[in-house]
Image (cartoon, rainbow, N blue to C red; front, side, top):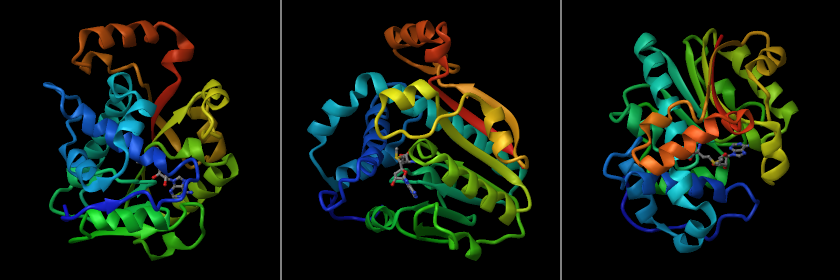
Length: 268
Ligand SMILES: C[S@@+](CC[C@H](N)C(=O)[O-])C[C@H]1O[C@@H](n2cnc3c(N)ncnc32)[C@H](O)[C@@H]1O
């Protein structure tokens, strides 16, 4: 990680960009637990580097409760990623809407594989101040919905495509076109992402896209085959705090809550 402070206050207040600090902060917070689920110590280092009113952010993201949501989601996507990369050592990784997430350090600490982290240009400008671009690791500053950025990526190998906390912020037509471009570009691979239920879009303002289940995505792009869909409460046994474990157990009995956030794995 690079030294020196990073000023986050210059970031445009577009209603979405601050969310990357929310998830980063929650991962850092969770790593302080005696037995963390994810234990992302890189997130701690990144938070320490950023000039921001984290007390205000803390009131907004309510870390005691929400740290588990973010850690369970990240660990599921990390576990699926690791399994795929073990099966496909030559695969490239395309991490969409990466924000300030340290997934490349968690999964490929020596920068040994072709790995592309993609987010909007102002986010990538910040990211470059925190994480070095080394080895075969590349950052791309673009909207994922722009055409063209995929053209420079290798098209002759399988791809692991990960989009965490991204699709709910995009319009359905944007997601459809993006998925089409990805499955047209790469010969095969896996797509991992999380989606929210329709009622979440009604109550959470920045969200615009929801999905009822994985078959919606297969209909959207017939090249994608649903392999697994895992509700956020599925791995509640990993929660180290008895009270929150019981709370997630209760939420798991209510279908609307269980399916409020679901992790998806597709093959193509
Ligand atoms: C909730 S944050 C998640 C960040 C990161 N994946 C994580 O888990 O910490 C949403 C991210 O999506 C990015 N994003 C939203 N719309 C985007 C777009 N059209 N193109 C690229 N990135 C986008 C935001 O800049 C932000 O980094």
